Length: 344
Image (cartoon, rainbow, N blue to C red; front, side, top):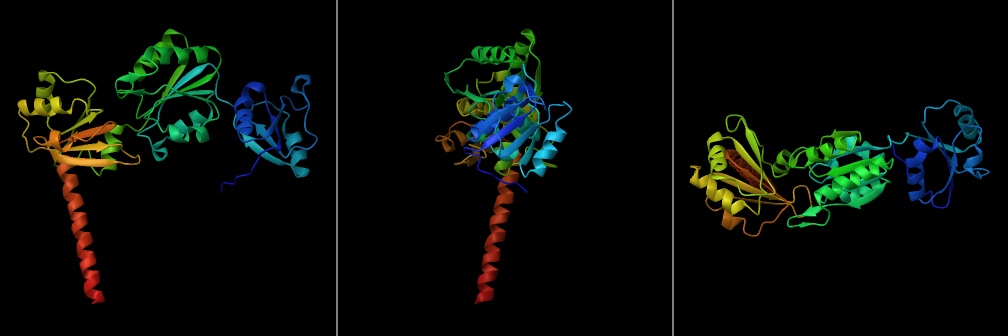
């Protein structure tokens, strides 16, 4: 059971050490409460004035003994007591994979890291629309768009490192998985070079999840027993086209709209048949999700109006998805026909 309480203008006493309680203080201030601090059970001179009777006591688990008598007296007096986790470690960076952009595919680890962050540097492909609800830390948009990087990769790394060295718990929130064309390796290297502790929370990669959103499995028994993930940011070489065409299985291309004509032509030159099924899945899991299905020989014309973010899928698994979709549609038609005959 989850309850919501309007804390606007109410007195909230946050207990716990300053370091452990810093994020709880921010969360309650963001909720509109008048927040007071108590850092040790008997009170400290630096804590300032305390409310005579707070509406709620937020008890931060700071690991220090001696808080329980105060909390017991508060409960006996009818004052609400809420347990709060201690803030995350200061002076570190966590790279977080945000998945394909929907909250449903955020991991538990990602949600916890966002809750504990002092500052979040996020991309446009991450689920940023709900960040204010997930994190009370500072939110900094460092997202890139094709052809327009308002914050360069070098500057992003500099911002992360500077914030961590200043004692903040930093989250770098990226779409998909940080280590799948996400430049996560570069960001880890920048942290290591600066002596900043860094860890990685993997995310659900769009290479698998976005095709799934369109009903396309990247592998299917007796159809495809492998899949290859390719970056579509730059055109492939002739050798790469040849290797891809000769591997078999499924080819998944991320952010490949800009290089789609070169890819399709290169694969055909490398011997892939022109009637190979192909799909373009735009805006997976987002409003306006759209799937365009054609053959390798006609995809350039069919996808003329498509735009990034998009995932390209090339292979027989696209045909499997089409067959399943047609079967489902035919079953629905038969059900409707049977219902009409019964009514008649």
